Image: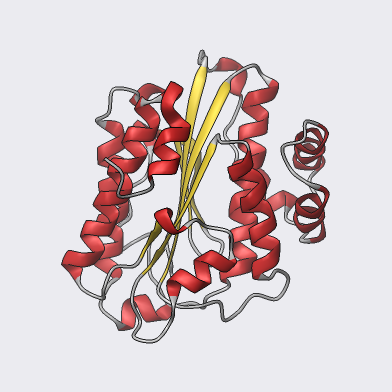
Amino acid sequence: MSENVNNLFQTAREDGIISPSSMNALTVMDIGEEIQNALTGNIDAMELSEVVLVTLMPDDSGSIRFEGNAQIVRDGHNLVIDALAGSKQGDSILMHTRYLNGEILFPYTNIVQAIRMDSQNYDPRLGTPLYDQSVLLLGAVIAQAQQFIDNGVAVRTVTLIITDGADAHSSRANAAMVKSIVDDMLRTEDHIVAGMGIDDGYTDFKQVFQSMGIRDEWILTPKNSDSEIRRAFQVFSQSAVRASQNAPNFSQVAQAGAFGG
């Protein structure tokens, strides 16, 4: 494991942010280098007193393409960028996008520098290692947040995991390991973790995301249509904007859920 990331996890553990079971899940996975590649550069140069980390994991499995949903997923991701970039707190929002099979589109960067998804950088054709990659993604959120905390910057995070199928290709993690990490994050009241399950006709996405620790009010289950998927991304983006603009009331936004006013 990358020494820097390992140190960040150790500090989070000592601060009581993550539990021994979550620490074990993150270290057993040996994902330090992959997480290191997601982190921003020299944060000392950032003159911020608070920051919001928005993290997306779009599904890049073959079924997205087979179902004709590649473009709407691209559009949805870009809609989130546009909504956050246009918000009052845009200067303090950092975003990171990592695809479900591990490819990093861009590490944590200011929202105005976020890379838009297009047909050149998003070609859904792989599998669904949902649990493995969720542990990795959430590990990146925790590590990046801890880096800012260690520098005296207040941090809130909003994360969205997107899939159109149940886990099929994880080899290291299971739902319980993801849940341990999500439980710890939600306990601090500084994190929102959402799940979007695009209907495949048979997967119970509420059950899938519940088993990963995601709360019902943050589970989006659009039907397999452009309009439904677009609406789900709009709901998430509006929630992310609300969360970024309401530092004192972040926990209220979290409790209200994706469909909260």
